[in-house]
Length: 451
Image (cartoon, rainbow, N blue to C red):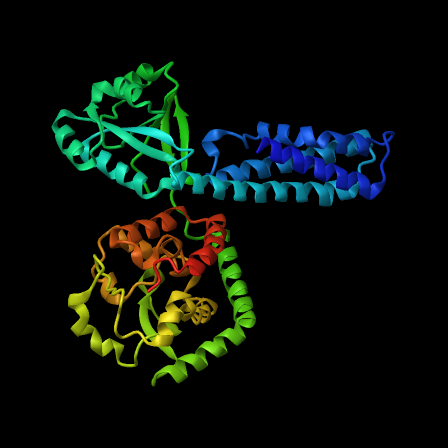
């Protein structure tokens, strides 16, 4: 990344210098000459090369963005204070383009790094410490996401849980007092302590002392699995560090912006995709008898019901045939899904594979009952069976796409789909919406979990 930023800085300097035909007598010439060195230094000062933020998405990109804003501020102030003849094109065009290019390069690099991690490379060996159930849960979560770069190689648990964990995972297991020894034996680079373990201050203090000088990273799971990002802060109170958890914000100016963006993008999508909408409607009409659109009552924000519309992908009497198919349900929890549902029409299979049947929901977004990004819109019968945690999905508008859409859709278990929806509700931001919309395109093209 340092080399890439240096090359980008050189390219930016060359472009800025050539546009104004600067000479060694001009300040602009020396600024452009220094860009290949200056830009990597600025990014380094902003923490853009820190290994712990590599492939973390918004955190890594925000550091580069802060560095770019800092450069622009310094250039503007210096140019004004010292009356330097810097080109407006450098400040207004070249530097913002350099920052954007660096962000794009990091996106590509992050995609490459995650691909390598899925192949078992560029990952850290992790030793999980805690009680049996928490250790098994964290091990399962990390195994399900190889792109995280954390591979569990062993565990340290209480004596009562040792045999059970060893039998379930097949990994080397030791007691809570054997962390350093097992970490050295397995060449672990990271120790992850679960929230349900012996996480008393004294135990963690002794463990951190024990790992000093070993080069092993110590991670502690706070137990707030679905709360992350800007809502978590470490705040010292009279020398005692406490984890501060801010309340989720469901109202305010960000919601106003989200509503405006939702309706603006939905309107633009309807206009651009009008020929596709007409073509799909004709295909549905010709394939099987029945209406083009399928309307179904769904539950939205604060439990209010609305009529969600989709292109009909099943036979006209699909609801009447549902009772006879319950025994074939392949989904756990409160949902009903069949991979080879006999009610789906020939055109419907293609519509579902490409998610084209969802396009009429753009009109739901325009009407305000749905958002472009949000939790999956549930049926009333599903909401009736919600427990306390699942009910939190109704704090925001349901979405045409969401974390469930880009993470496997129908391949997800009920617990996993609820967990993803709760993660969105608890950590919603405009940046997260933009990321989900971007990744939705890839999920649609690969047809992951679409049936």
